Image (tube, rainbow, N blue to C red; front, top):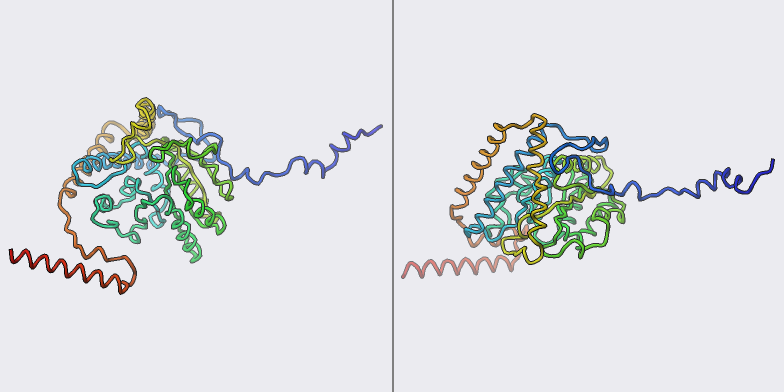
Amino acid sequence: MTTTPQAVRRASPRTRRAATPPDPARSLLPDADPVRLLAENGTPLPVRADYPEPPAETLREMYRRMVLGRRFDTQATALTKQGRLAVYPSSRGQEACQVGAVLAVRDTDWVFPTYRESVALVARGIDPVEVLTLLRGDWHCGYDPAEVRTAPQCTPLATQCVHAAGLAHGEAYQGRDTVALAFIGDGATSEGDFHEGINFAAVFKAPVVYFVQNNRYAISVPLSRQTAAPSLAYKGVGYGVPSEQVDGNDPVAVLAVLTRAVAHARAGKGPFLVEAHTYRMEPHTNADDASRYRDGAEVDAWRDRDPITRLETYLRARGVLDDASVAEIAEQAETYAADLRTRMNEQPTVDPLSLFDHVYAEPTPQLIEQREQVRAELAAARAEEGDA
């Protein structure tokens, strides 16, 4: 028998190994299409073993918090128009992301929000008046971050990415199983702090979940002008961070994907990047005119993908919700909004000297001098009013 050169090459184990080298990036890549467990009309899609569906009662609670969150969002928008808030960035349409993230972490975990995460904060159980204190303009942060394990809402883009990495690394260094979840907008992925934070977290295997809510616009800049990547989730590959993309208007999928991401981080495997494809239904803030950069047809198309309607349809079909329970939750939301209105209509008492509190752990001589100058000016103004 004659042995051909081709047969020799096929028989060589060394040649076979060289022909199919392992792809180190394969385990880091997200699905080619966003993970989806519910169709847009609320009907279930085929079960996925890698993303098991959360328990029915958890999904019912998710629905309740989403309904309350939207009513809060609507009320906050109205308060802005009434002059009770200086500014308000709505997250209407992003409730599945806001609430899903909160449900995926423990109360002992840390959350690092942006300015758009007010719904996430009230879903976490923070007093809504305290949440709106920053946007009201009468204090730096209305709640105690250490008490509620929630960092102050971050207005500078992406700086919370570095904070989350540092805290998570510190917690792991001390032997705690704390996970940090950092909310990010699509525009923030263009900032240096995002890249520095995720790179640090990857190198030191810090337990961080970076959660990008891709709502299509960084204020007025469309996604196509921000990146040429197939999706923002692919940005994790360059840092050795596993990633996933998910339909951000599918509440079941959002919670399933984030639950897995948090478990990955908590197990000591390092950070995880999740990109949720969603849409901001309202303008960037009340000061924005969204009609300048997007048309009504686009908004209407996303309105048909409403995450609350999608989850309600699914839970009704499963017998988890009915007319009575839906009405009860809607009534809870109205009570919640009425209480918020009443308390926000009370004029806050602000001490001008509090401006100097919490600037430094120990006040500097210059800060003390400035505070005394303000104290003297206030005293002089009161004396002048008394003489008048």
